Image (cartoon, rainbow, N blue to C red):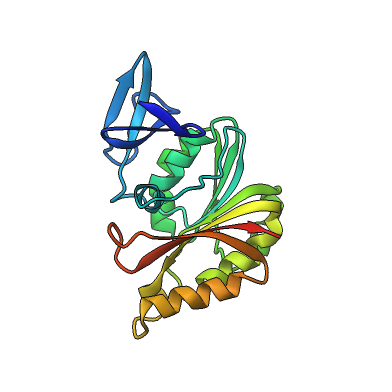
Length: 216
C-alpha cells in the first residue's frame, strides 16, 4: 500500500482512505487493517470521486486540514471518504432532500468534522451564516443548472481554491449529445474558474464527466 495523494492510498484493491471511525462502515465497503491502521476501500461504482480517480484524475486538492463545501451530500458515501482525508479539517455538507439527510445524519453523528446542512444549493444565502471560506467546493447535484449552481456558491471559495464538479449530462438535457452539454457547462465556469482537468468517468457512470478547476 502506498500513499498516492494526501491521505489517500492505493493497493491491488484500488483506492483507500484511512478510517476516521475505526470499525464503522458507511455503505458496506470493505475494511482493511494494515500495521494496526484501518482503511476503507473506496468503491468507484458507489462514489463519483473514486470513479474520477480510477479514470485518471491527476489532482486531488485535499489535505488533512482542508475546509470543504460539499454540495449534494446525498446519504454520505463520498462525503465520508473526504471526511477521512480532511481528518483535521471540516466538510460543510449541503443536502436538499429530507429523506437523504435523515440517512446522512447517521454518518455525520459519528464524524466530528462533518457539518450537515439541510438546504438548497441553489440558494447559498440561506446557509451563508453557517459557512466560512473554504479551500474546495465539491458538487454532485442532479439538477438542470449544475455549473450555474456552483458559480452561485463561489463566494465561499477562497481565491486560488479548487472546484470539483461532477456533471450529469442527462440531468441537464436528455435530448442533447452529452459532449455538447459538457462543453456548455465548462463555458459557464470559464469566466470564474481556470479549468485544469476534465475526466470522463463514463466507465463507471454513464454520460458523466468530472471537472477540476481553480478559482481566479
